[in-house]
Image 1 (cartoon, rainbow, N blue to C red):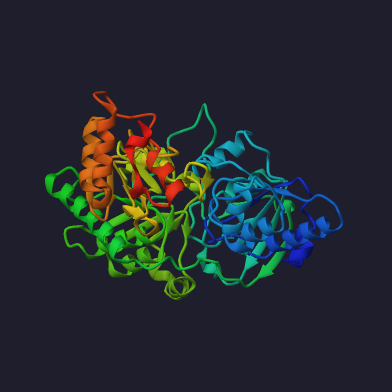
Image 2 (image 1 turned 60 degrees about the vertical axis):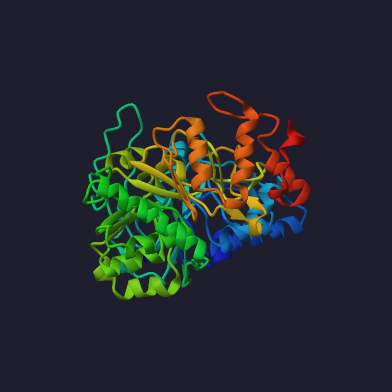
Length: 498
């Protein structure tokens, strides 16, 4: 590494100029740069104090840590942002139109950048655990779009983070498909297969400088599971066990994709506890603490993902036992971890979380009351449309029961009814496969809706009269309007909307 210039984070940030499009490594806080982004934020604040403009375009793999999204948002340093975020300050900035945000499927951003659909990144900022003089970059705990931005960018800034051992070399499978029309098929036949190489290889002349760091990933522990999430987890697993018994899922089971959060952790725990679920593999985006626990217990034999989004103590335990995990974990670019082609071939059972769902099976994953962006669609649609079985989970109510998570019509559609096979809440399972809209509605109301809202939704169905999809345009957002007016959907009076 002697050929590279070692600089401070502020010296590295000086290479970033107003109007630059900048790509950052990582996927969630795992593998995201943690020193240079705050320095860019300080540079922006200095420019603003001098009455000068300073904003950059921000490309990432997914969400990041507070030192990236949070620092840049608070410094008013973001011109545009894509594809996904989960930071409170960034969310506030984009929901007040201070940041131009466009939501994207996570499998799409890397190819769209290569195709020239969006401005090319001038600079890539990449966290690494090792860097060689001939331009080999060994990533840390998250891959994201790192290979693409490293190849496209004019210049690269490396954060060399000694918190992550150089022995991570070999845990990554770095592969970028060639573009159409001569693109060959992706050859993965099982989650443990490899297609690429363990490092990103770049022209070393592109590397502007190296910032040495010793910083933990900013992965926060998820909210602990509770009675409701535990019931959801058990309902998911009981459904899957039943599918195995009927022969609709092969007896050797199929790979699992699971979303992020406490519901996902509850599902993982239930999968581990149920003796009717055999040892299985995972092909997913985010590998969480619960997956590491199941690997140690022998319930998960292999996990392929885009990031190790695990808390610092759990990550340290993995590093202390790295050789045990070497043949059980692999990290890929999100273009590969989320590839619809591979999802369909591998026969994934996909389990994701809905913000709200409607009685016909449409799912809103992103917007609060149809207007305010929460985080973004993430990779859920990458998996859902091509899944062997696509499952969505949600607690049946929110805000202490004042909001029903199941409504007549979602205020924003991210996953349409044709892609959602199964909806599960703490109350039960609605298997929507092979059902016409009215039958889906009745199935969801009777099995998934909180009992306090069931009659309200039964009454809604009666408003429409005979039709293929019994929808009432005057009343379909009546529960949302009632909540905005009174603070409680239980106050819905359909006579007001006739």
